[in-house]
Length: 192
Image 1: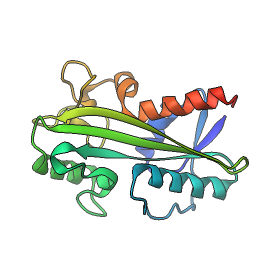
Image 2 (image 1 turned 135 degrees about the horizontal axis):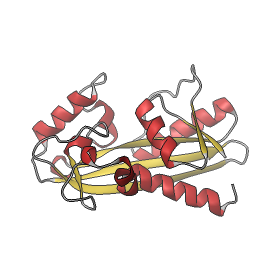
Image 3 (image 1 turned 180 degrees about the horizontal axis):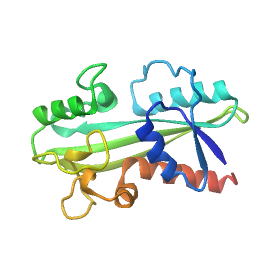
């Protein structure tokens, strides 16, 4: 099955492309405006993106919203993870702000809501994946992106950050990996 990912992020497109195999993931066509994220939850934002994309292309689409929640910050940055240090903040600026505000060793959780929308059948379903961990004392690793250099997953290998894990190790435990596996299980069970 061909799926369109409602995102402009090349990092997400690459990561999801690996995760959805054997299904084929296609980028969203240029010129389709997904609009602002106005939902109050990851699920609302993911569904909003998938609905807009599916309607625009007239075919099934998936949309995600994901981010990090810090226990020490009452769950922030949450749905504001991509713009935690400001609307035009870079990954490095967002990471620096989290490092300043969340103490080493404090609890973290990555959350991914992944919505599937089929305009032909009217199906709209959201899957969620979570990965819990803790804050590293310093950023480590060259892999991944975003907050990965400070995220030590609870079920990772030997206290390594997500940025230090291989892609295969990361995909096996990540929030996106878990959400995608739930989507794929549903697609398989529904005969797609």
